[in-house]
Amino acid sequence: MIHRPRRLRKNSIVRDMVAEVRFNRDMLIYPYFIEKGKNIISPISAMPGINHFSTDTLVKDVEKGLKKGINKILLFGGGEAKSAEGKSAYKKDTVVADAIKLLKKNFKDDIYIITDVCLCAYTDHGHCGIIKDGHVHNDSSVEAIAKMALTHAEAGADMVAPSDMMDGRVGAIRSLLDDKGFEETAIMSYSIKFASSYYGPFREAADSAPQFGDRKSYQMDFRNPDEAMKEAWLDESEGADVLMVKPALAYLDIITHLRANTHLPVACYNVSGEYSMVKAAAAKGWIDEKSVVMENMHAFARAGCNLIITYHARDIVEKGW
Ligand code: PBG
Ligand code: ZN
Image 1: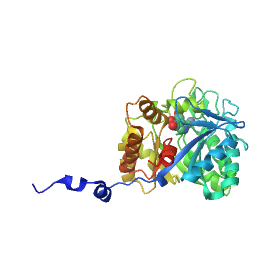
Image 2: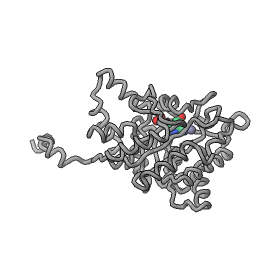
Image 3: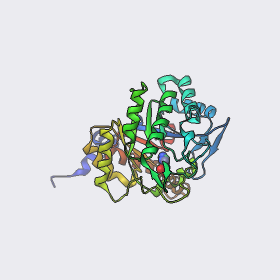
Image 4: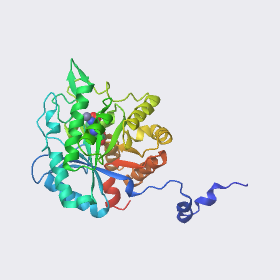
């Protein structure tokens, strides 16, 4: 026998030596849910290990994470007044804006702050845009979304991440930010965001489930890999700095295809439902959590991701997985 692949699997030294894909913690971005109030750490039942924080407890938790090397976070806000047009999303003193200011005051540029930009936690109907004539109206939604991004930039966000899937929002955000002197604020676009049932636990956490209909008129149809590349190309041409695929596990083919078709960094969002499935099976003793999580992280890296947004990030660094 000439070829014996097992020679290079003999022990962990040689296996580590020939490993083709390496995962490291610099790739990780950790999401946070922030709400109004003080001294709040309230568990999200469908996402074991993930909590809602008020800004004061957030600062303490971020400090803990920073010590372990979690220095990139993604902020989600909520708890503001909900209205048809989601106007509270772009108030100057949303809980997200307050959190950004407080974190930057405490940690300066030791923490890299990314903010989710979308209206669904601020509209009373729970859609990601403004409703006109019974449907989600693109251009007025884009205007509101760009204003929201601006308030985050003004508060000191390093990067804004629009997750609404309206057409043209990356370009609108880029030009508003540039007009107002925030040309250094980066944009990570949720470029290829599929209408997915894996967002269920998140919608409970963010109180952002649509009150009627679904998100299929703006989020992508999971049957369409070519259209996915078109979405990514549009965002790239509108000035996105990072492109994201979401969800991650069920869309590894899309990640690989995107990696081959862009010069930008590619991020994936390992979403709430993907996290909760692992947690639930692990709690039942049906899978080994650490091994499954690290297998998934390597799958993202192998597929071509440069960045991984995941609720598992804290376990990975704190437990030294
Ligand atoms: C809001 C938003 C969602 C997620 C991130 N931003 C939910 C949705 O679009 O319904 C999902 C995150 C997750 O499931 O972890 N537009
Ligand atoms: Zn939304």
